[in-house]
Each structure stands twice: as structure tokens, then as C-alpha cells.
Length: 276
Image 1 (spheres, rainbow, N blue to C red):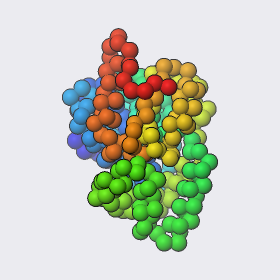
Image 2: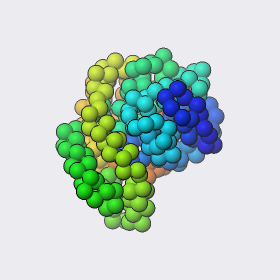
Image 3: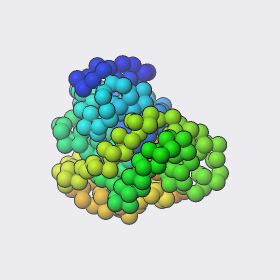
């Protein structure tokens, strides 16, 4: 169900709230939105309450704050956590959302029982910072039109590009429909963002998932990231996927998240996927 939720940071937020049970709050990445998690919400809705929203300053929430900031997204997340459940919730962050998830955990560790990182690192690697900075310069020259065509090969796996062209073009159009101002603000925030200092403080179970061909959060970089987490952490690497696993391998994604969350509710050990 889509609804308006009041929060202290600005105008009411448009929030997608699906299912019942222990809460799972999902945060999207650059240029995305709550729709990234629509399939997950349907898959888990019987056993989980899945909360997602366009970050303040983007998508349906583009006008709720004066400008986009990761801190505003963190503040909104914390307020939603308090509204979702009296019990601790799980946080899931895709790409840039992983930074917001870590920052949210740091502020309210008492309200979080696990973290899921989907193609997301505590900060962008230097090569990606350069790529994103160059993208800002191109948008200043030509606007958003054509940006999607340039970005698609970097976020989808080769197999997806060759076999699911219609889908890739659809997402390309969605990306280019982002507000130019909002998208540039999001890039600027991401390039400067870091949650590295939080990683060593994480004391809850973690699941990291990335695509074999992910250029933004490669298997190598994800493995190095979770090695720094002191709590139990698992890494899954999904074949024939890039940065958009929820689109490229949705069933695998849903199963991985569901198995991990169920492991928190029982005494059996989480074993699905490739551990690192």
C-alpha cells in the first residue's frame, strides 16, 4: 500500500508499505526508487513488512526537501523504523543505499537486527567517483537525454544487455526521467559520501550480494568490505548479473533475502550461496 507518512525533515513522504510481520526497510541506489523492491515486497509480504520509499529529494519525494542528501534519507529511515515495529528491523541498501543503511545503523543500532548490502560499498571506489564526476559534466552539456544509453552497459551484465534489450531500454527511459537537478545532487552526495568508519562497529548479522559483473561493487571489493565487519557476514556472487540483481535474477535475489531473514528467526545457520 502506498501512503503518505509524516516526518520531521520535510513534507510528508510517499512510502510503500507491503505485508505484515517483522520490518524490512529498503533503500535504493542512485537514480532509482522504491520500485526497485516491488518484486521483493510481493515475494516476502506474507512473512515480512517491507517498507521502501524514494529518498527525500528524488522520485515521488523530489519536492519534500529543498535538495537531496544522504543524511535526509538516513533521518527518514530512522523515523520510519520507529513507526514500523517495536522490534528491531532489517535494513537493505542497494548501491548508494548501502551507505545510508550503515549510517542508519550507526545512529540506531538498538533498532536494527541485520543488514543486507546489495551491490553496495561503504564508499564508491575511485574509478567510480571519476566516472560519476564525468557524468555530471556531461549532464551539464546535454541534460539527461542520452545518459541512460551511456549508463546501461555499466550496470547490466552482458547477457542481460544481449538477451533482454526491451527491458534494458525501459529502465534506460526510467533513469532519464529523473529530475536533472535531483540526479546531479545525488551524484554529488554519493561521490563525497563514506561510511567506512562504521563498518568495524557492526554487531549484527550481514548478507552481501553482488553480481559477478558488477562494476560498482565488484566481488573483489565486496569481499574486502565484509572482511572488515566483525559480526557474522556472508557474501553471495550471482552469475550473469551486473549491478541490478533484483531485475536480472529476481528469483535468486528474493530467495537469498528470504533465507537470510528466516535464519534470523531460527536456530539454523545461514548457508545459502557462496560464503567469503
